[in-house]
Amino acid sequence: MLRLAHAATIVAVTAGLVAAAPSTASADEWGRTICPDGSQRPGCDVSTGTTGQTGSSTNRTGGRDGDRKCRKPGGDVIPCRRGNAWAGGDGCYYSPADLSADTVAALGGQPAGEGGWYNRTCYAGSAGGELGLGGPVWIAGAAPVLSPEVLARQARAKLLLPGVVIELSPSGDQLVRLPTWLSVAASSWHERSATAAVPGVSVTATARPVKATWVMGDGSAVVCEGPGTPWKPGADPAAASPDCGHRYLRSSARAPGAAYTVMVTVAWEVTWAGAGQSGTIAGLGTTGSVRVRVAESQALVTR
Image 1 (tube, rainbow, N blue to C red):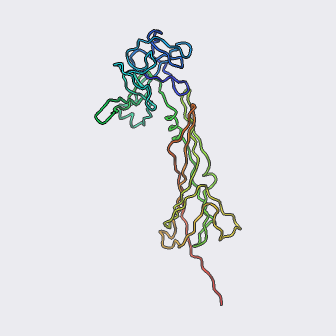
Image 2: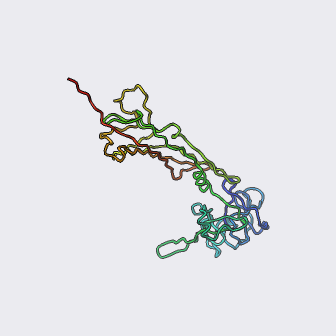
Image 3: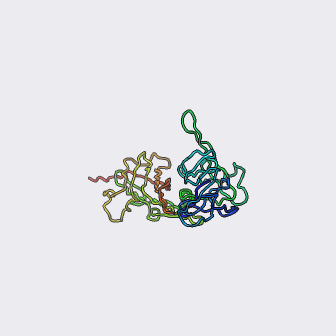
């Protein structure tokens, strides 16, 4: 059976179960029975008394036995957990599945009634080592179980990141060989958070901007570790930006439309925390662009 009973990370199965007598079920360290009915249910919400109590199990269907070990149906001892998957009574391993709508449709659609999707992996020996085969399966009667990692990905998908507003300074046309200060608006550079939850488990994902990569349109790129500093009117026009800038060496006269396309991509680091755990997941990126004319500065010589 699947040993999924920790209250901080598990939604317990309560529907459609028959309580077993203490003589046919064992208790784990959280005081819950390990279902002995031969099903592949991912949990069993039947109290056995005080935490740490141990029963004299006669469970021969696999899963967690009375000696607090997990076994295949034939009796061979196997690890109770592999990665984020728990051993089932059939000797295979099950972990909560985070399936897309297209995948569910390809599997025949969402079944009616209570249940949950799980990734089932069965391992067997082979000439080259161990081979794992399996795929997503629907387990009826089991409340959907979501690990914090799955909820973290759901929270990440809910993040609403701001649009990128570019601020080139000085404003207007830029001049060859004079510094251009690069920055994004403050509204484009601040943390954003989103939360995903199921009963008993809540995970919050937080996106933080960490880097801005500028493509200047003249074949050059600039990487800045922050949003950049806006140029202030009255400042020395020959002074370079203290943290994010560029100097054009040729005009945009021969570029399409006589202007360069300046593009910036803001990289966001995404972290998550919840259910007593934390981690990082794939980051995000937001992009903005603007057309910029770069002119040659003309010197006036008088005699």
